Image (cartoon, rainbow, N blue to C red; front, top):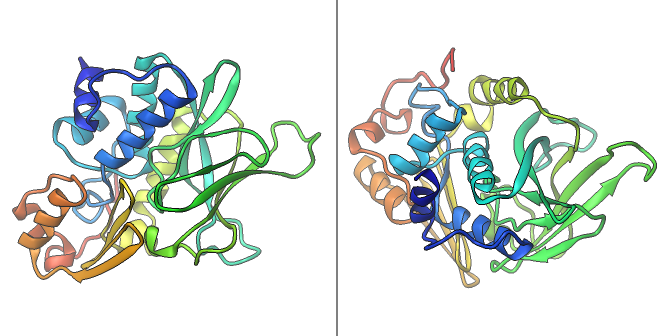
Length: 290
């Protein structure tokens, strides 16, 4: 029943085939139907990443979520479809100063199909992203006109090794942290070591509570569009579609809720929006417990 409800939420009539094409279909449908957002953090609710709470929030209540929620749901549904997967923790490289080592604040998935590992990620909020085989130099295009590739880092003889995901494409088709079209730019890096549930809980807690980070100081939402990308940071809305970019300033809480629903497919009540710090609500921007 959960799989049926999930497929209905993302607009698929049936489960896709257990193939690379089926994985691509499922991930694309998920990313176009369930918006990326962090609004429970400024609402002071914390982020719960167990399967039941994530399903209730993202499917039953029609909300969105950030990577720890999105990829918890995606992992559960891949398993229900019949695709084996496991999580990895990544260091987000977008706008990271050269020479620094960012913390592991992103979770993605490694799926297995016919003995080949695939990068599967329904929870990266920076831009569109397709599944990629875990092979050095593997590339794919997305409908927003961007290219994506995986690069193997370090020695080929190093056990496990580290990987970097790169993107080359229009900056307008990102959440504002992307670089201009023309060259490869790092998105995040990761390795393939085992990740335990408590590792995810720890990373999620840090990401959702550390003061001064993107998720504890801003209100963010984004979603992949069929031919582009939409993002809203604070009251600034940007929609990039078919090579055309439009910007808009959101006036009030009622308009904010309408845009969340119409553009990002996120259900939020006006009363909830009015309680956000963005619209004069409580100034508490991050919870002390999760």
